[in-house]
Image (tube, rainbow, N blue to C red; front, side, top):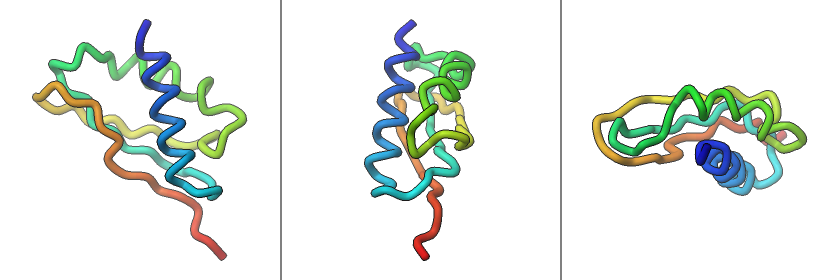
Length: 80
């Protein structure tokens, strides 16, 4: 299941971009022609995010008509 490695990469991208802040939500776009199962990404997400800045975050998946897989937006904890 290649979705496991894709989910690891999504979490890695989010944690690196968060610059030490806690990640609350990750939005991704998954193209219908990408051969990626959104259900499998969602299934893997909580396990992959454990112990990272994205632990407890919500994964928002939007289907598109293309062949892309993009991390579109991140919601992170506001710096105090």
